[in-house]
Length: 132
Image (tube, rainbow, N blue to C red; front, side):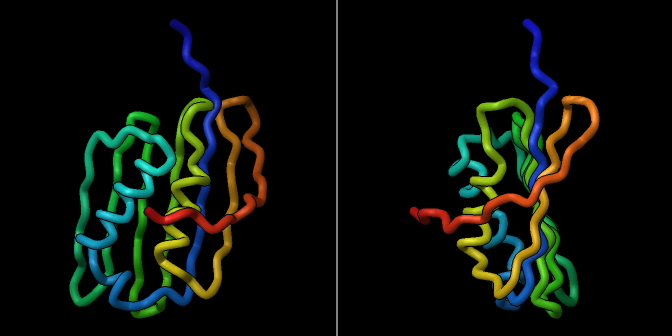
């Protein structure tokens, strides 16, 4: 069987997010797993780290690739990215879910189209996700 090399990589910087949310690795881990499931991705493993005096990193390894967040609560900042291979899982859905949960004041996002030769960069459309 031959697999497509096509992939989409969405990266978003969020600003103005609540300190307590960004400084809670356990809560962020739950949100990232929910985000992965909301876009139909298959979670293989999860790793998180709570930093001192503040900050967190959560990495979710997906069968389709990965979803991650790195936070700087003292700045109200989180860097989020999701890369998925193939056509069946849309990383934008996971990003939209996380942005809906984090409720940032500002977001800046880019989407890379990968695996087709020269990478192309797009400005994704951010939408409010339905939270379950």
